[in-house]
Length: 196
Image (cartoon, rainbow, N blue to C red; front, side, top):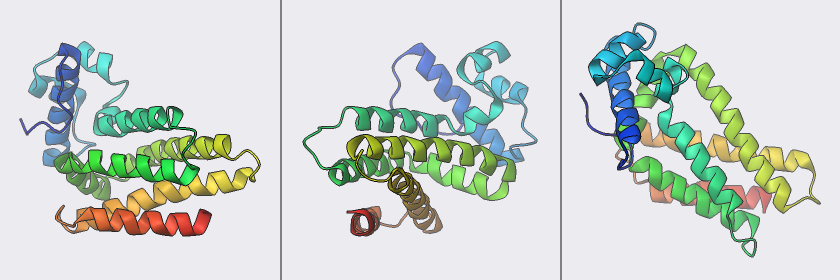
């Protein structure tokens, strides 16, 4: 099986979920997402089918295990942000932390980009997750700036997600070698200029 992609895990449940995700990615990349069955994933991971479905509602969720985790982390970071900080300061901080988290999982990110580029059905699933994440950012902006038009919050949420995908593409196209700190800083500067 390929190397561990997720954060250090401690509980048996987390270790099992990690093993399942690793097995799924290995098979998705080797033989294709559509061609891979849950039975093949559980066989490679050494667990039962029932165990798979305790961790993932569907096969597609194994392809986005870290995306869902990041969504939860972003939501918690926004909800617990210091109200004394400006909205843009919080956005900058959370985006920088999210970028660092993703870069620490560079193998997974590169493999997912490859997989998404050749698997249209997964792009549809990603779109749903993207819309959910954009709505999370928009809700944060609306809560911080209730006097501003709601459409502005939606635009900021959409811009943050679009920025993340553009940065991901730059990084993936470099084979994971691009220095992302400068790209993230530049993108955040443009966001602040547009919505500040």
